[in-house]
Image (cartoon, rainbow, N blue to C red; front, side):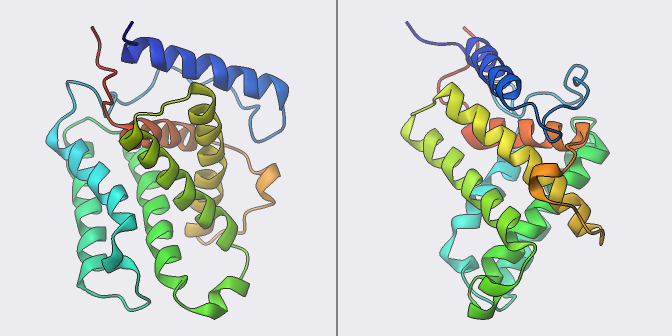
Length: 210
């Protein structure tokens, strides 16, 4: 029997809740979020701007980005991403604070991919690990979407990891000095950003409401 998106999201929520209960550390134990402050970026009602935003994240794997030089491609990619976020905020589909978190995460991901082309970057803490994990989680979710292999527990783990990475990178991007990754406080905006990115990267995948 075909699983509906509503059932899938419920299963993800149950799995994420179980993970939090087993690993109740400062990074996970924040006040419960209210109802999502943005609409789902996927499903039958997803608009073309959400699609444009998703394509920007998928393009992190584009070979044209694999260069230390800031060529036309990364500049245009960042602009496309900024334009999509601005349009979603202007249209009331995305909270401005969450859009800022998404923008910071994307900028750091692009910077990470470019800087990997320089060998000296591999020895430069502290931003390497959270940037690398952010990019890897995005790639994993995109591959899961392409293969149709959606495991609720894996998705929940990816979302939890993204929450930490996004919270850490938001502080780093703002010029602050974040603490240790396992001690970072996940803000409601970071949690919402992670939720959106998970749904964005998974796409429809046959989970439309029936």
